[in-house]
Length: 148
Image (cartoon, rainbow, N blue to C red):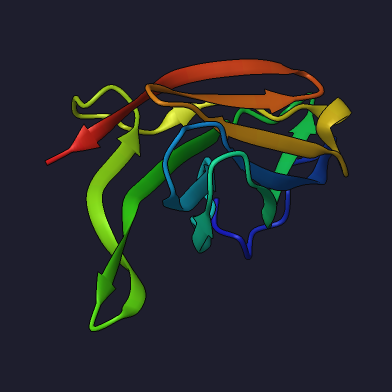
């Protein structure tokens, strides 16, 4: 189903607000990708976050209802950043690439948004080695690892 197709009968289009919280001890740039089955990919863009920062990054749409069969799929990309001093000037430069998932063929994490998540906030908490998707309807967890 493309974004131009009408939703199935008995389906309701819902929205959720997405926050990212950096629970690691490092400064990162984070990007969140979301795709409801058959729809275009939502991209948060990159957000620079210090340890313990939390910020809103995007709003996503999804569908609920008796005849809906889609799922919400997620990826979290990270770039560990470092502060350097060059010619007396502090700069932030990209370091290691990190990502959520298992590291095998499929890196999309399924975390299904439900009717109780409509117009609510889902917080994506990024820890040293895992990512938690925390919604009113439940919590999902996947790995967070350095990608070479």
